[in-house]
Amino acid sequence: MVRLRPQADADLEEAAHWYEEQVDGLGSEFLDESLRTISRISKHPASYPLVFQNVRRAMTRRFPFCVYFIEENDEIVVIAVMHGTRHPSRWQGRT
Image 1 (tube, helix red, strand yellow):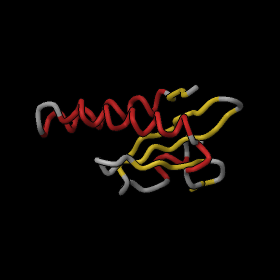
Image 2 (image 1 turned 90 degrees about the vertical axis):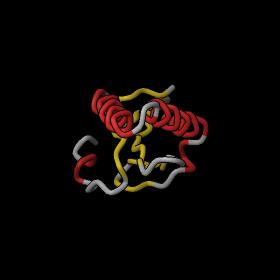
Image 3 (image 1 turned 135 degrees about the vertical axis):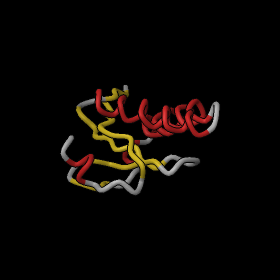
Image 4 (image 1 turned 180 degrees about the vertical axis):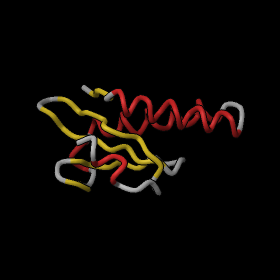
């Protein structure tokens, strides 16, 4: 099971809104790609590298975004979805 923390959900909404303002329909494409990435995470979470303590990172394929997540019990918890150039301190505080 995958759960998005409210901050991660807000990250997705903010980025999708920005992409939609750039090109009509691009926000939906961003969300679709992000959901595909999250689906891949749910199937093989341990295949993604640890980047900070118990936090793993998966990069989206089409957009320069990373999905940061942790494993808690039998659940994948997405803590952030951020542009790859953002400073790590922006998501590390969410752990």
